[in-house]
Amino acid sequence: MTTLWSGRFDAAPDAAAFEFQKSFRFDRRLFDEDVTGSLAWARALGRAGVLPKADVDHIEKALGDIRQLGQADPRFVDGDDEDVHSFVERVLVERVGDAGRRLHTGRSRNEQVSLDVRLYLMRRIPGLQRNVAAVVEALAAQAVAAGDALMPAFTHFRPAQPVLVAHFFLAHIAPLRRDYQRLAAARDEADALTLGSGAVAGTSYEIDVAALAAELGFSRIVANSIDASSDRDFAASFHYACAMTMVHLSRLAEDLIILCGDGHRFFELSDALSTGSSMMPQKKNPDPLELVRGKTGRTIGHLLALLTTMKGLPSGYNKDLQEDKEAIFDAEDTLSGCLAAARAVIGGLTLNRAQAAAAATGLLLATDVADYLVRRGVPFRRAHEISGGLVRKLLAEGREFDSLSLAEWRAASEFFEADIAAHVTSSASVAAKRTPQSTAPSAVARALAEAQNWVARASG
Ligand code: ARG
Image (cartoon, rainbow, N blue to C red; front, top):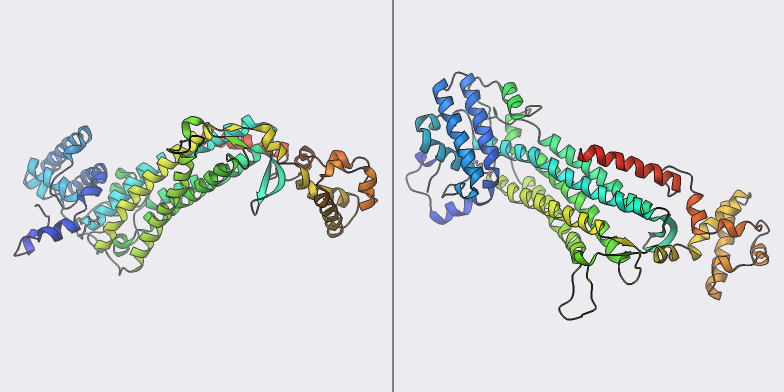
């Protein structure tokens, strides 16, 4: 086995203990970032006069070759090494000898691992953002296709008021756009150069950290070398952004599972994105949506796990922090898989207009009845009572508002006129809404156009 620290020890490491503390199995995913960081460090050492130009040249050439070998065949990134940093250094020394042995001058794996993870997140988060934008795009396409179709919106999961189906899809677009921003903020938080921090106290070589930051694409440098080695806030923010996105995907999945189900049938799931039962031939199950909902738990778990790990640690690097990586990779894979599944399911939805509209009428219009009275000067509390009294009567008689004669309306209140019938329909209800965030058709059209512009910007 190869270690970077054998000099201080009399005995070779215990094989099982060494195996236990290795991270190469999973941190090999940081190979590219580790090479990038090492190349930049070699150049910085050259500029600082620590490494002769010839050494820098040899290291640059060898790391370039190593990167190519790793990219061409992932099996190259393998061995009995402790972690990806040890691996890169070993294969470098195998190629350039002492020049390679000089690369780690003034540098620590503590800052290196943070650097690698930060570079990784900065490179990968934009892909997740594009996947979020693709889900928004699919939702916007459904909103366009829905046109003026109606459905009920729910509170307490009881049918509450009529809304445009487009408004329902926009209700899932809004949180995903916040998630897009949260991912951008997580990327910004990762954007700080740790090199120059050394193991904990900084480095004693004249490293131009500003130049190093610029070369690696960082817009700033960490504020404090001790903090730099303990800090995993950026990883927690990434998990929070992922978990929050998953919570929103889970809500969407739950809505669709129910609204595509037998109790509602507002939408039909594409056969291609459903699964059957091994026993019951009639079943058409929404497995992809259930998995999206189910996987939300593990992404929330990753956030909690990291916070719990961080909570127990004193300042400076502690090996506990090695636990950060598998969770980051899993959160990324889980989120991107779920975004792809959600996008496909949304793209394959068919709206059952009649079914959805039928559920958006009836006693759901009771608020509109009260609003009618308010417009004629009745105080809202009184109007609510009158409408509630009518609901009670209609429920008892198994009827709906549209069955009431003018005489029956006027028996409830003399403020009702013949035009009440035209006010108490689901399309009149949505048309009566006045605020920009409401389900009024003009407001929805504006919101949808704005969402489409956003998609064009976000995916462009
Ligand atoms: N594999 C380690 C990690 O992931 C790299 C840093 C090791 N540093 C140390 N002082 N042992 O955190």
